[in-house]
Length: 449
Image (cartoon, rainbow, N blue to C red; front, side):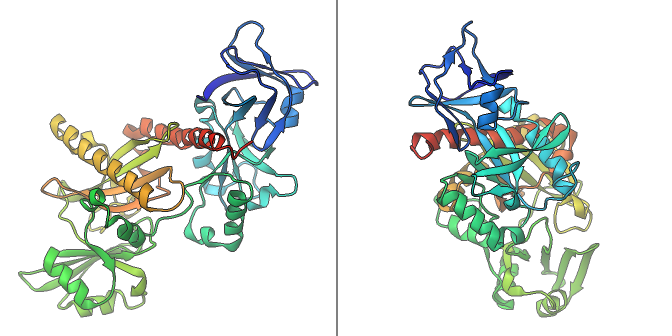
């Protein structure tokens, strides 16, 4: 079993290391990322369970000397130090204070947890790769500052590309393909989910089907009319949308025979029409309906007359098991079709939404079960290595849980709430911890050394 150890460095040009007392093998080689040095190690003379490395060896393996803890994996007669985790993204700037622009703060919080998890994470983009030397000019975060260090190719790569546009670039796809296929590096969270694709793949899963509202690509007025007649409301939204952009709520009032459309562009709108055709011709006149889907509307539970939905984060841990790492309620802004903060939405904890303890436990359990069922189903039916999912759920007036969306790269706006600080840290830690599992799995498959 891999284990986290304290690591210390001592001044010595010779290539020397003293391994922890409880290591069971007698190593004759050490590995960091894709670099290997065949050196016989010595057990700590005083019986300490600490890894001590000479500055000479650290330099040869390009191990950052600011590290205070690291995980050690044992494989035959080798010790593997790490895991070295490359976080792949785009949008780098020339400013050392904020190398990734407005997202620098987000990544600094993630990288700051390296010591408590026992991993070695760094940021990089395609421009930082030296294919000939199999090295990367990685961005590390230490003592409140960003620094660049040369490191070998990592044990695993965590995909944090910011949007679908960057993901679809040919250069990006070539980098991913080469690192995965030529260098056998596991790449987790490899792409943004397509809403319709997720729905269609989950539709035949018995457990997942329980949580799925009727969803289909937009085909005709008749289709929307049929769903409105059945459910009273539908949502029309982009197949590849995010952040609530382009979401339209369409409501049919049987008493007055009127149609209403609620949406947000720069402000919230609520428009009234005498026919569905006039609504669609007016609201969607300049939109490509071929890229939209129609989803069953749900009569959601409310908080002070405002609809409520729920964000649930699920993460894989160091054992490769799914864990529920965060649950938050999101309340729609006045007149908004979604609960996003940018459209006036508000984040609350379950305690704030459900004052009664029995209700808190009941709905927390329901949301956790739904997230676990769907995480397992998504992992089973979708391609790639999936390590985190952000679920958007609704709960109807009968207490049933419905899946609105699954996000492979969930936003973090809910963590602005002071009551979710612990969950904020936990989700970050688990993101890095999963790299330990993937590295261990990779070693056992004999692909690594």
